[in-house]
Image 1: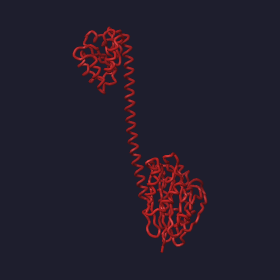
Image 2 (image 1 turned 90 degrees about the vertical axis):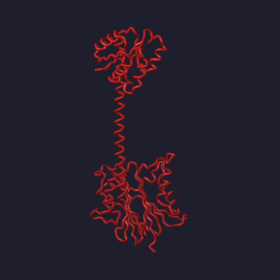
Image 3 (image 1 turned 45 degrees about the vertical axis):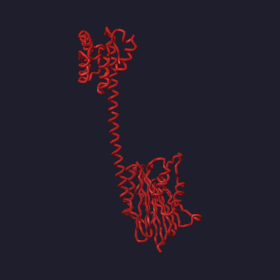
Image 4 (image 1 turned 180 degrees about the vertical axis):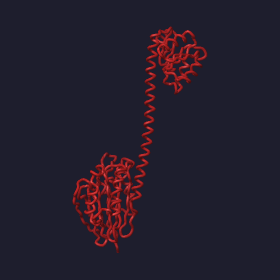
Length: 399
């Protein structure tokens, strides 16, 4: 039942208002002065208050100010009873009442049909305020829930990134040395890479990038890494890149992987022959920079030769062979290193990245972190939109 508080020091007005409003189905409480009215309001939290303007000790204006100053009562609809003519004729009193927080005015003697109508209108406004307050609380709860879910998701993505990072190989030392960079994006993608000696003479090097973002893409990349690292593709010569890609394509058709596919650059370096044989399934080209003077530099792009893994079944992948001169450097990377949004609104692009790569390769004592710093200074965002993976393989001299 709707609660209404009547505050008036006139017993006759009290009785008339109480009887009239009770007959309308409201729960009525009466207070005989302003101080008692404020106490009752804080106890009852009524939907509507009808208060006389002129009362001893505490007048209606002060009661209204204190009621509206209370956060728990701020939406209570407040009607001031004024002397005849105050509501319509005396502009100064009306302004004072509005400034105090009054929502409506009714002049005495009270016309009961007008009173009933104004009470009904006031209660409708109060209910609207209550509904808005409830919706605000619901939105705040929803926002808190979303923030909590966002924090959980960010934590899970960070854990997934840490897991992927923990699987990546340590740097190689010796005749062939490696340096690697893995910077997961906020969404986490499907980048992964590995390098290891199959035997004393053959070094496997590869980098793959699963389509999409999120934990699903990361898990697929980890699955591929584990299969390649354990050499668990049956009837496959892991020294032959074309055979490896064909076996991967057979086992990872996108129709069985939630419509996910992946690109991969896979190469095998023969230490004795000083040859690099590779196959590329839709991946960005690897960049081979020989040890040559800058004015005679012949940079090789080891480009994509076939479709990504999972697009079509029964694909025969093509191999290519390159002679590796001493002190050459091979760079393999994901597209996250050059799909960088610059402040001018343009993507960095592959060609511009290769130019940066060549320039940094010619500098003394540079590291991949120096290259990363250069790339990120060109990025309009603080973190990459996609995983950023970069692998540097240096082929030294055996003598």
